[in-house]
Length: 229
Image (cartoon, rainbow, N blue to C red; front, side):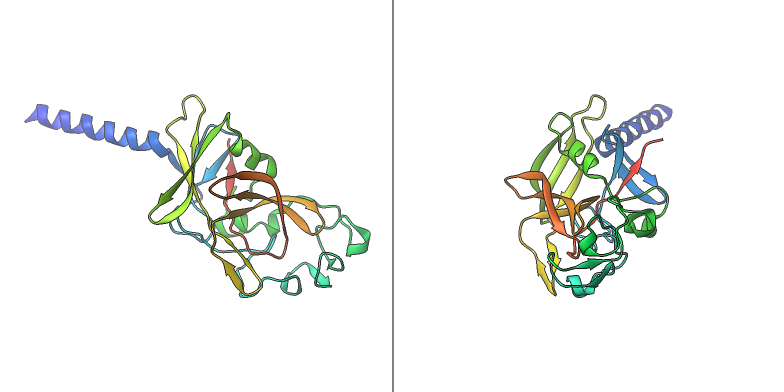
């Protein structure tokens, strides 16, 4: 009887260790992350999602709430204009002919929905952190399906982390009052490339790129990161 209890405890411990090794879930302020052996820890799901395969909520760059219509005229940092040629901006601007110049090219904490809604040290990823995740020396990207949702399983190649992964769904995007449910996955970084464009993670089943950008008014999901200590 005692031996049976010992064996049960042993196998239970093995099962727990195996599960932890597979995804190595930890928590930052109550939200899950996986340490892939990179410079930051990646959340297991998008802001507004309850599971890794869910799209979550869609946000214009730097805004804190989802909405019904995503256009320049509904963008919170726009003061006039409705195209990239004439839009005037009140914040995050490097061009004199596009409004108030503050030369901020990185999202501030007060405008970071990951930090505002999740708290702790959560935030948008930088474009450099996205590129680190994309680097084939660091991770493998495998197109797959999780509970009926297409996306990428991103698995670490780092020594000691090779069984750990995250799933990033192809969540589409929002523009105007419409919703693009097609294959592409578009995710914000915290980094502007021009006054009216922010750098994004852009993928399809055939290609993955960080050399893409989206107009700031568009509704995209956010996959947060938090720093290592």
